[in-house]
Amino acid sequence: GIQVEQSPPDLILQEGANSTLRCNFSDSVNNLQWFHQNPWGQLINLFYIPSGTKQNGRLSATTVATERYSLLYISSSQTTDSGVYFCAVDPGNTPLVFGKGTRLSVIA
Amino acid sequence: DAGVIQSPRHEVTEMGQEVTLRCKPISGHNSLFWYRQTMMRGLELLIYFNNNVPIDDSGMPEDRFSAKMPNASFSTLKIQPSEPRDSAVYFCASSPNNEQFFGPGTRLTVL
Image (tube, rainbow over all chains, first blue to last red; front, side):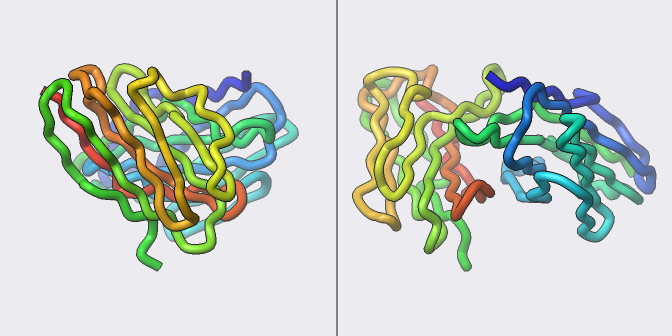
């Protein structure tokens, strides 16, 4: 089956810093989602982005489907950005396949 | 919209007891998914439904687990009998197409 790899696995940032999270996938996909799991365990939809670039406030995402990767940009990070960021892909013949996530800690 | 609703939010039970987790998907969504999340195994898909019909239950760990979706607005995940290794957070998600929206989860502890 399709493989989804996220990097880095862990990231510590000073408040105000910017960061880029990466998601590589091993085969073509129909769709891709980014989620944020906050410290209380809730999984929050960030982006539904099969291709192209989208922005939502301080967050933006870019998916280059032909090269099989997606990037999530966090600018001016805040402590509330802490948590785990998951990339999930839809290969078309199964439901979403999740990566193992990037654990982000933003310190004041 | 209230989003995906799950109940209970927390459940503590003793080994051998029956546990029933409930999910109300977002109105109009035709797909429903049950996941389990643990530290060791991460997020695992247990089963999913399209238009109330179970499509793939290959992720259900054992016969002790069963899931139903009697109508478009309700689904249950039952564990009978429960075991301590079933302790996890169980998420329900729904989707109108391919984009999934998750509920808040049920944290299950089996003593």
